[in-house]
Amino acid sequence: KKTPLHVSDLYGPRISEWRDRELQLSRLHEEIVGKRESHLNYSLAYAQNRAKRLQTNQLVDIEKSRQRNEKYLQDVMLISENLRVDESNPVSPRLATLQSNYWAMVKSLKPLWEENLQPTNLRSSRTELRGTPRAESLNSTRGQQTGAGAIPGSARSQKSTSVNFRATEPNIAKQTVQKPERKSISKKNKTK
Image 1 (cartoon, rainbow, N blue to C red):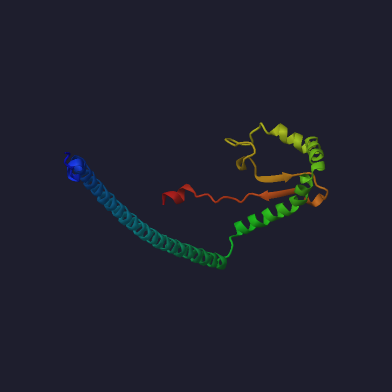
Image 2 (image 1 turned 60 degrees about the vertical axis):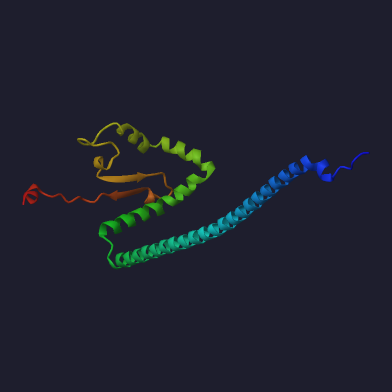
């Protein structure tokens, strides 16, 4: 007669393997749950730190922009004060003469500039200027020096600067600007 086998006898070695495998899986599960929790905590802490950093960066940026705006306001106030002081001081005669000569030259040359800007007159005005006696005399004197150490065409070589152009009206044909005289310091005043 056969004796019946117990379940423990039949599955005995397998049960110990399954138990070991179950313990291993439960340890792995606990490890995974722990890692998940640490990752969640890390991501929460990272989000909080990032929010704090952004907030402090915004505060720093706000402070920097406030300081920059204050500096700009101080600069504007200083410039406006300097303008008020300059406005109250009279303009020097040399500057007034220079300004009036400049604007007179601009007003007299403006029609010619406008005329030269037109494409049809551009080529004809160039050819007219090449054939004038003044242009030829300027070309012939360019190589000559007018004084010791003078550069042709420089302020040292001329007593006045002339602007010549072909004009329809005779009163604006020549604009002359006189150079101001320089005050020189004598050697006697330097030694005293």
